Amino acid sequence: MKKPIKDMSLMEDKSDNIVMFYPHVSELAKSLVMETLDSRWIGQGPKVKLFEEDFSKKFGSSSPAIAVGSGTDALHLSYMLANLEPGDEVIAPVFTCTATNIPFLYMGVKINFADIDPETMNIDVSHVRQLMNQNVKAIVCVHYGGLPCDMDELQLIADEWGVPIIEDAAHAVGAKYKGVNVGSISDFTMFSFQAIKHITTGDGGMLIIKNKDLVDKAERIRWFGIDRKSKQAGIWENDITEVGYKYQMTDIAAAMGIASLSEFDEQSKLRKELFETYEVELANCDRLKVIGGGFSDREHAAWLFTVLVEDRYTLQQKLRENGIESNQVHFRNDRYSIFNEFTEGKSFPNMDKLEDNYLVLPLHTKMGKDDVKRVCKIIKVGW
Image (cartoon, rainbow, N blue to C red; front, side):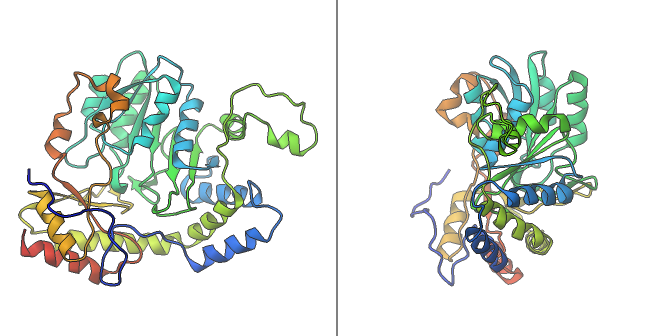
């Protein structure tokens, strides 16, 4: 495969350039942050609670939502609430942000990596079924780019073996599977509010939990193992009975989240329109295939627009020369040394086929349809 011949580092944000990502921070978000900075609460306080309640109503069918400092915090919290213990096994995708799988290393949990579905780059359900055994205590799936996984099929497997599904929905705020919001489907669903996600709080995350009995434990683990409700009521007995972490969200971050949530429908509509414009413009491009488009049973959240292309490096170089940034965003986890003990002797043929051919094109709320058409025009000329 031909390698890039020029620097592919982060592109400078100039007026003529189309960069891959751009944070969505509205004037309302800035205003609410300033209001919060002038208030009594800048750490975890009433705005965190309000953000949790509003997010739960919108995406979680009013299931409990726990706001934390990052999506990774939310994943680790979900793994603990699922009672994963050292020596347990989980099934997780080989293709994802490392944040999905690194918390297992904290916990001494064995990772059984599953291959990807070559049509979606989501977890391959058939491989999940092959990997299931009596030691597997959870299935983790990632909705790559914002396209929901095959949740019915995964749930059948989970029910058969009596294990929970944990959804990494870092890309999938606003996605739907068979008309149901991602966030209202599985035992645990994590969302990310990292800088360039649909909703940003600078950094942050949310965990939606189906089982309300786990809420008190989740809130304790989020704050060092301390029962903050009892402490603030003046009746805390000054005991900690479980290991906790400093995983809380601040009111400063929550203020950004509340503002973004109130404006979410408008910016989500734009992202989906940009995704659809890409699909239409690139429909007849012979050397390119869109990943995640054309599904009628699920709604794409349009965080990433990914294509499979022949000679990906050459196309990437051509786009760069025309002021357009593109790249691969996430990578197969079996390439990282920290996961060697879980990958030695394992093969992932679908990932092998796609590894050098996937490319992510720009998609964010600073773009319009004309920007998408400009990108597509350059692609359609050929490379």
